[in-house]
Image 1 (cartoon, rainbow, N blue to C red):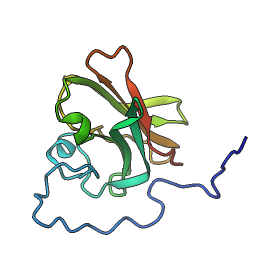
Image 2 (image 1 turned 90 degrees about the horizontal axis):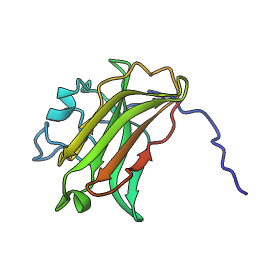
Image 3 (image 1 turned 180 degrees about the vertical axis):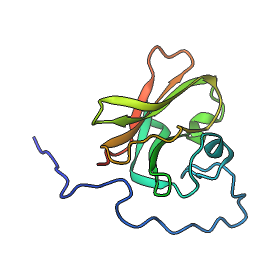
Amino acid sequence: MLVLTPAGAAYAGSGPAPAPSDTGDRAPTAPTAQGNPESKRAQAAGVCDDAYQVGATGHIKRSGTTIASVKQFYSPSCKENYGYLWVWDSFHTGAKPYDVTLGVFSYDRDAVVGKLTRNDTKQQEFWTQGTATANECTAAVGTLRPEGAALPNQGASEKRC
């Protein structure tokens, strides 16, 4: 059995924040698959506008097909982590309402914090409120249960310490 071990620890906020991207003609508050901390839903959740993605994106799959992305964001000014879930267009278009949960899993507490639950929704973009977990090992965790499915499909972003 081959086990891959990371060469070093990755800390929320370690390394430089990415440069702001050119938004072109896109409205600054438009939701995006990449995650826009200035979107209306992000602002409603209280996401600080300097938040940027930390760690690798996780995916929620159903029958081998990716249906959603799960990401963790970090704000240096607010010193908070946020969970982000984006339902892929290929699933979202034509889907019946579904149930979504999202949170930031703290490995230190062995608990999901900042948990968000939306039932019977067609929403595409989801953000948790900020979690005071910047000094903990964390990952964003999410589930998506399509209508008629007995169990949800789940995914998690990369663990960050």
